[in-house]
Image 1 (cartoon, rainbow, N blue to C red):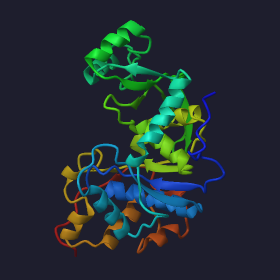
Image 2 (image 1 turned 30 degrees about the vertical axis):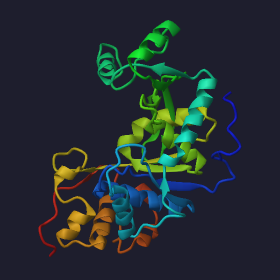
Image 3 (image 1 turned 90 degrees about the vertical axis):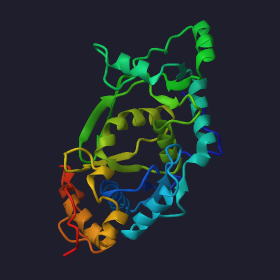
Length: 315
């Protein structure tokens, strides 16, 4: 058992009202795919009587002004949230406290590998693509001392499993790989997989709605939550929006942000109508509240939505 949490840190339990969330990273403007996921997350939370939290995950890759534009775009299509916008960076000390709990339990180790070394090991025969092969897991103290002089270490989880199973609203039972994930990068910044698990638990978020490109990360996050004594949230991974090439929608695919579409003469309501149609909602979304009418996400599209381009002028 891990040491218990400090009393100052709320855990994900009955004392907190259940909540859903949308958690953009302010690395750039939101595109149609992001807005679509945000709308789905809002709908699931509101339809199930949950609070809806907007959390800006600003631990890294922050582009000046992006968070403010993200917030404005979400409000423009009619989304609302409970309480003030939440920012992740101020909670770095809390994340590191959770890593210390794991360390005290013997569940972490220092890793000195470079990205190039990790990629080479994972690409070797019998390696799991993208998974850390445990190179630094059992280094001697003498070796660790020598390596510390060469470069600062990252902190990795000493995982006790190689896979874990979660349940997803659309995918059903899903079993995915769990490796010795990074908890703290070698610059001292808490890693995404740690921060998102701790934040979700300590904010009462028991419903996670996000793009299905993140489904493979759910087992490792659920496993980490279990180690920390948190409840596993309900997962809802919605299909992505794909661009003209069939790859995940990106800025290079043309006018895909609210600002760009506004410049072409499209209103936020026009975008909301497109979002609803792409999800497979069987009635027009003139407002976000319309999403909750005849609520039946089980009938939504389970295939990715396709975006080609918007005409130059609104007819």
